[in-house]
Length: 150
Ligand SMILES: [Zn+2]
Image 1: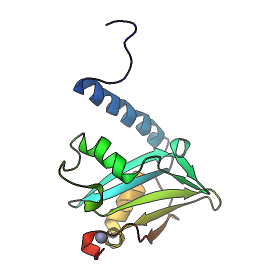
Image 2: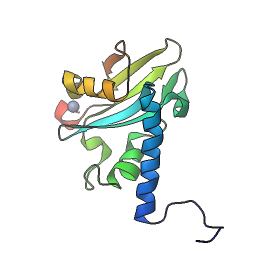
Image 3: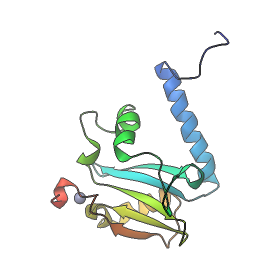
Image 4: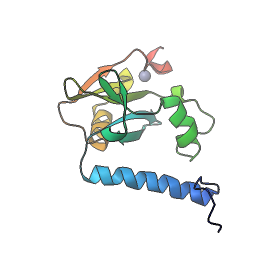
């Protein structure tokens, strides 16, 4: 190993190690119970949730938002690691996001109506992201799957 080797992961093992590192860093925040913003999908009945502590979130006006878009995380992270089907698009499945309103100090969950109808799925997302019980849930015209008649 040469000393001028850069830190960009090259082999699959290095990539897995990088993902593990990223997951561990997030887990440390989660142990502290810090609420997170995030994006999520329901893929074949399973919740696929990506969370991020507020310290890493991006500011959009008065909101703190997950720093990457659904499309990018789908192709660059979830598909690449075999977490979701490779021959699929990010908008093939119902999805949503959780943002933080810096003015009201509250978290807001926006999701496809078919996710909102499934109370246990909503609870799973709230629990995974350590969200307070006062978190609001709303539908959003952006999040409308084909099943919902989009
Ligand atoms: Zn739907």
